[in-house]
Amino acid sequence: MSKREKTRIFIGGNLFDATDGNIKKDSVVVVKGDRFTYIGEKKDYVLPEGDDVEVIDTAGKTVLPGLIETHCITAMIGDAGPNDAAISTEMSKMEMLMRGVSKLRACYHMGFTSIREGGSGWGWYEVALRDALRRGDVDGPRYQAVGYHITVSGGHSCYFPYHIGRHRLEETAGYFADGPDEWRKVARLNIWNKTDYVKVVCSSDLADGVAPIDPTTSQATQEEISAAVEEAHRANRKVIAHCEGKTAIMKAINAGVNIITHGFWMDEECAELMARNNIYWEPTNAYARNQYWGCTDQVPEEWLDIFGNYLPESCFERSINNWEDKQKNFKKLIDNTGVKVLLGSDTGAPWVWYGENAQELEANVELGQSTRDALFSCTKWAAESCDWIDEVGTIEKGKRADLVIVDGDPLENISVLLDEDKIQRVVRDGEDVVYRPEPLNKTLRERITWLG
Image (cartoon, rainbow, N blue to C red):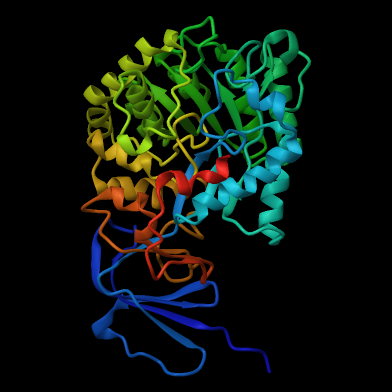
């Protein structure tokens, strides 16, 4: 006789199932094996009996779907130092791979049961990491691989000077390519190496202190971007586009990309076209906000012992301008157009740390996004963007049983998702990833010492 699957019943909590944005009080969520089998109200449910039944009291807690991070750079460590190439020259891809396991776990243990990489390159180690996670060789979240950023010679994400980078070393995040044929070729290399996405770099970056091109000016040509997108879509891969400034954003939209990351200095025309064409936006607002704090001496006191402002002074003015633009325009853009925002935090970039991913939600809400939509950005909308919506992203019968039990109400205070002691239980596929019955009372420094 085969062993009966265990039934776990989470009862009494305030349920945000991410289907409609409403809270269901006194909820019952039943998990059998790795799937949800019943979602309803406590008053309508009769508790079963048996040795294979576990009842978990969630009264006074918020029950959420497993959270989804859509842009996490495992090849970076949060504070890269004054030279973007420093990591590249000090680590091999094997070391980067092993460090990646710990980085993903830091997010996993804060409720992020599914993660999309942001594009680390480094010999396509992400593919090996993804497959190891799928097989269960290492413990960690559900994960998708992106591979190399396709970038022009001297462009963003190839962190060597050109006289070295032109040799196309594997130990960097970007791959130099010039002209449509080369962009097509690198897209094919990413696909051949079994990445889940293709990523293109359409502009420089806010923090590129040595880049001769302002981030609001497009680096790649329309023909280059379109060639990579055509190749990706032919292979049924979505395309992520790094874009800052309207020119680059419009080129990415015209090429038919699926996700735009950063989108700094976006205007309403861009946002309307994105909404119309179902292009998702990862605004990386925490990255922008935290840069602004560093440039204006407004770093929170609890961060002072970990916060290094490595931004070159040449970037200060545009970083300040970018955050001020967001304060004026972010709410207007999302309210007026309906463009879907994702929690794609760019964790791993300077000033955004692993496990602190929900800073992105905090920054979005600070700029005017509703807490309801902030939660959609790391549940339903994120799952849609990652093509996971049939399996995760909402709490519905038949889907994979990913849950986060929070001692608090993120609809009232989104920052509760940054408090390790409030993330009481994390469940993936029906099994506990983390259970914290008692507060750990760790400082921020203690939580991120693994960066070392």
